[in-house]
Picture 1 (spheres, rainbow, N blue to C red):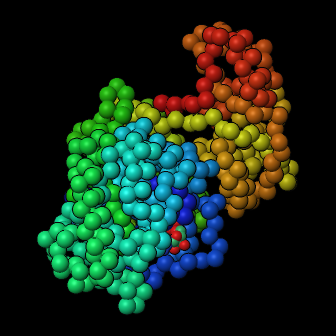
Picture 2 (picture 1 turned 90 degrees about the vertical axis):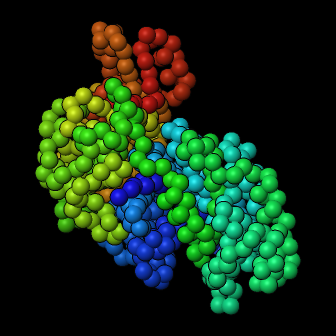
Picture 3 (picture 1 turned 180 degrees about the horizontal axis):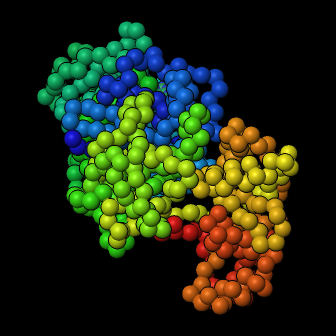
Length: 520
Ligand code: GDP
């Protein structure tokens, strides 16, 4: 069976959650539209995926959903929408072959859309654009397409055309198949008949929708066909062109077409960057990398699940693989897949699939698991935190639990943890404030530790490296009050501010101070 491994990226509120539901429904993985009940307490602090799960009353947190349609297995990876979790998102995007970019038709490209797009571009991930909410007032389709082309420097190829966006929505014209999907307005706005036409100027359209709407479809649809490039598979696969689908996730317009583009044109599993050379999906031996670790997914089992993207080979239950970080073997006894809403035991996962490997802390983000001893996947960085806080413990008796919780969450990649060379107060580093909320909540719920944060004297953290071990040692020994170890005991320089850091850098020109730490 073929695979399509993808993520949905969007600015908060553009409709990612709704589109996820709608895609699952279009693929037959969810049966009733009413299964999603909006809840009052939509907490963004947790991942959007949890939001869906809360709404559906599912207790198991997963970050992957797998569903099948005809002969294709789709693996949908969740990415948190909020920018405070951008690092998590970045890592997740290393594990996909394709992304759907959701844009709100009334807002166009928003800051987070753009950032996430840039991440995709770094890895040449092909993008399918879904312009959502065409059932209500929005910008003109031309303005939206031109904005995407200009701001993102991409060729845009509209696949369908909405009638009456900005006024009364009458339906979608499929530019590729010359079909018109009528918006049935008799009882709310729902997809109605789909009629075959000979083109945008087919008189049959005028019989169904009001004349002014048919006129504008004829004019604008015709203009769109003439002005924008036709779909080009190679340009799309190389990340130079994005097919654009107008639709409404909420009302089910354009979603089937989106699924069809993903199925027909979306890339199959691609070769993944690795040392000494990229690994092609047809390599016989099993290879994969951990892009995410989540602790305590099941409240009844205090285990951790490492999410592994399979890059080649076939996973068999019980097989032995090497973790190339330390060269130790590991048996894959209970790998799990995520079929629709259930966790299932994985059997025969292949390139493009995501499996969860339960473990007790042996697996970390960036680890390579393989039957080959000579390969390590690359390109999973840690970013230097922008916010540094000292942790203060509510109940001093719980130091041990606190340290364990902080270490676990640091390994999961939720926070950075710095242990200063002098003093016993650990420092946590995060990219966004919300991560501190999550840290606090999780330590409380999962480790029974109540924690507060105090300002720390530092604003800048940099990993310190040098090819000259004697020089590195000298730096560390002469500046112990500014040094700390991260969770993997890699030395880190902590500075009060950018100015102080600048001076320090000048004093140590042969030392490399890095804001990014490649895990491999
Ligand atoms: P997310 O933050 O990107 O996951 O966005 P949600 O899926 O939670 O949607 C944000 C809001 O937009 C919700 O109130 C949705 O009901 C609404 N919404 C999503 N899709 C559509 C659509 O196609 N049409 C309209 N009118 N509203 C939509």
